[in-house]
Amino acid sequence: MNNFIFTKTITTSPGKVSVGVKGSVLTAANTGNPLKMDADKMFERFSKEGKSENSSGLGPAIVKKICDSCGYEIRYDFQEGIHNFSVTF
Figure 1: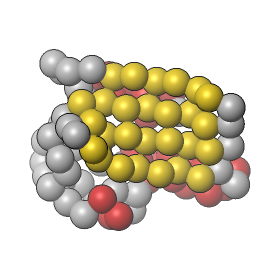
Figure 2: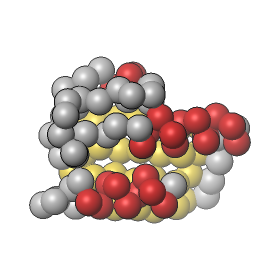
Figure 3: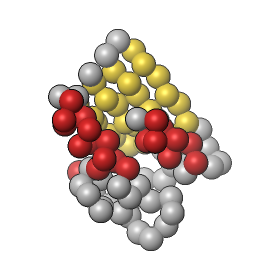
Figure 4: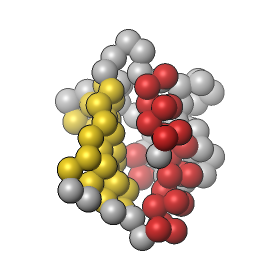
């Protein structure tokens, strides 16, 4: 998760990043443009929006694999200019 959150901070410039924990849910959100690819493909290995360094790359796929291995659930949505990720433990 550390790598995932760090990546959000370096790819959101200028912009805002927020991280929080409430009960058994970890949330990470950042401002940004809508995805150019289907959000359902974000968690697939080697899915990228393009060749940009700021593209999501392997990060979300690795986090999803870890979550699956541990029995956690990861979710993503985009609303009003904000990318929202949550992991339920």
